[in-house]
Amino acid sequence: MRTAVLLLNFGEPERPVMEEVVPFLERIFLMNRTLEPGQEESQRTRARQLAEQRAPGLIEEYEEIGGSPLNAQARRQAELLEEELRRRGHDAVALVGMQFTDPSIADAVAAAREAGVDALVGLPVYPLCGPSTNVAALADLRRAVDESGWDPRVHEITGWHLHPEYTALRADGVRALCAAEGVDLRDPGTKLVFSAHGTPLSYLQAGSRYDVYVDDHCRRLAAALGVDHYVLGFQNHSNRPGVEWTQPDIDAAIEGLDAERIVVVPVSFMHEQSETLAELDGDLKEKAEALGLDFHRVPVPHDDPRFAALLADLVEPFTDGANPADVGYGQCRCRPVPGTVCLNHRLERGKA
Image 1 (cartoon, rainbow, N blue to C red):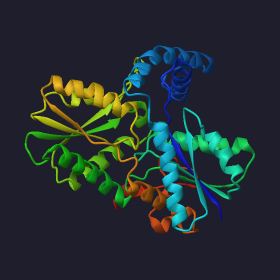
Image 2 (cartoon, one colour; image 1 turned 45 degrees about the vertical axis):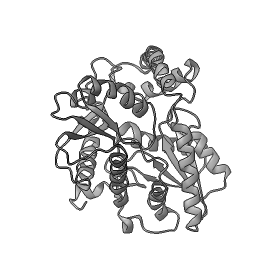
Image 3 (spheres, one colour; image 1 turned 90 degrees about the vertical axis):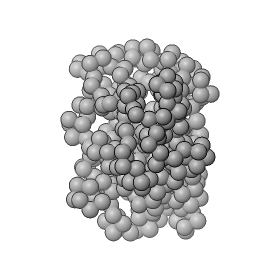
Image 4 (cartoon, rainbow, N blue to C red; image 1 turned 135 degrees about the vertical axis):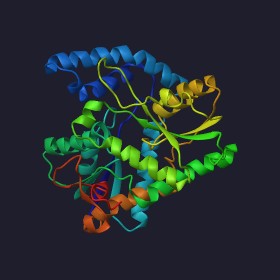
C-alpha cells in the first residue's frame, strides 16, 4: 500500500510584502469569522479590513527576523519524515499542506493523488490540539478530498503531545540551552516560563480542551526537568476588539517574578516563526530586560532527527496495517468523526 503523509501546517509568508501578507492574514481572519456576529458578506469585508490594518506591523516583524523560516523548515521536516519511513521499509511520500499559504492543503491532496497513493494520513504539526489548528486543518483536508472527487482511505491524527518521546525531546532541548548558556534551573534565581499560543475563550467554552492539553504538557515537561514551580503565559493576538483570550498574557506572566533570569520554552510550536523570533526573542526579551531579568529562550527542535522519528512513529500504524488502538490511539474528542484519532483520549480515562 502506497501512503501519503500530509504534514498540515499554519504557513507564513516567506517574503515580507503586502501581496503575500494581506491574503495570509485575510485567510486567518476568515477562519475565525464566527468570533464576531454578522452575515458572511460582512464578515468577509471585516476580515479584509483587519488584514489590511494588521499587515504593516506584521511586515515589520518579518523584516526584523529576515523573513519567516517556517515554510522551509516544514519542507525539510517532510523530507526527513519520508526518508525515515522509507528506511523503515514503507512505500510512503511526505507532503506539506498549509492552512494559510501555498502549498495549500488542497494542493497537497492533488500532489498525493498524482503520486498514485492508496491512502492519506493527515498529521497537523501542532503538538497541542486546538480548534483553529489541528481540528481546522483536518477539516480542510476532508473538504479538499471531497471536492477533488477522489476517494482514498483517509486517516486523521489530532493531538499527539502524549507520545512518550515528545516530552523527553523537549526536555533535552531545555537542558541543552541551559548547559550552553550556564543556567541552572535549580537556582532560586531562575524561573522556568512556558509560552503557549493563545486561543479565544469562546473556543474553550464551546468544548475545546486546548487549555487542558497545554497545562498537561507543561506539568509533564517541568516534572521531567525536576522543576516544581513554573510560570505559564499565552501569546494572545487581540486583533478583534471585544474577543476575550486565554490569560495571563505572556508579558503579564513575567511581571513581578522573584527571579534574576527566565528560561522561556515555546510549547505550542514545532517551527521557528514570527511568534518565536519576533514576539519572544524581540518583544518578550525587551520586556524581560526592562524588568531586570536575563532572558534565555529555548530553540524549537524542528530539525532534531528524533523529531522525524517521532513523526514516523505517529503515522506508521497507518502504513503497515496495524490496529491504531494497539499503539495507543483512540477516538478524538475534539473532532468526533470516524477516522480521527488522538493520544489525548488517555487523559480522559486517567491512563496517561
